Image 1 (cartoon, rainbow, N blue to C red):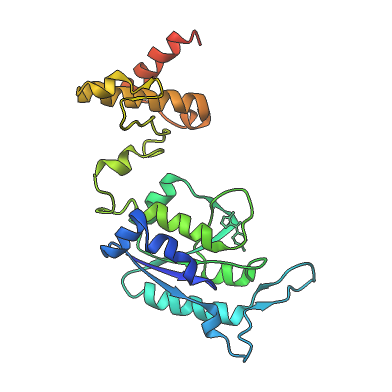
Image 2: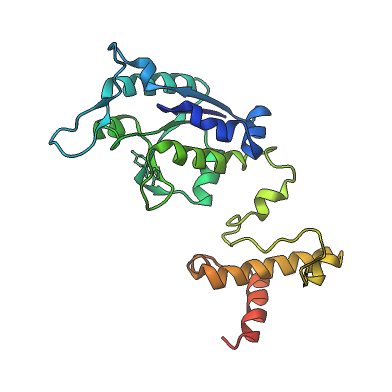
Length: 248
Ligand SMILES: CN1CCN(C(=O)c2nonc2N)CC1
């Protein structure tokens, strides 16, 4: 998988290309990440990359010519092996959720456009962008952090990225549920013991306990997620067992 990033600050991306699960995925060659900086495509001695908005108002936009030339170069690289999707990160985009991350991980190559200043000319979005993606209903200083969140969320889903094939499956949201509680040594910490079932060695009981805890946590913290799910018979039984103890 090739991921082309168009950004004025490519150095920021070492946070995901050089550390942790995402860094190991890149090192293993599960994905190639390359960068195209619009500043390298400027044609003036000052290397200007911003421009004033028509209609006035505060702030600047990314200058069209350097950005477009960077996008074309990125597409040329990302598009050489099959088709590629062009993503623009913005608060106006489709909210990033686990299903979208999985879809991106299963898709072909990607071009990620990171806006700065007040954003980019709408005509470039119309001409080149296949999907706008938002990481949340808030405004950050540029598209780079959002692009890193998108890249990290999809890299960990690539086959071979995680040590244990089940890890991604057991993550929060993998079945539309929040994650269950986790425990490690010591067995007793300041008077609090690890739940006995986790010490039992009974894998079926442990699986069921973890699933029930995930259902309870989702019911308590994100009932909106439960509303979207059609629970399996086992999931319904496990949640009902808990709710019956709560006189809900
Ligand atoms: C131009 N620039 C504005 C700020 N920005 C975001 O707030 C954002 N991106 O993706 N999800 C978000 N929220 C990125 C693009």
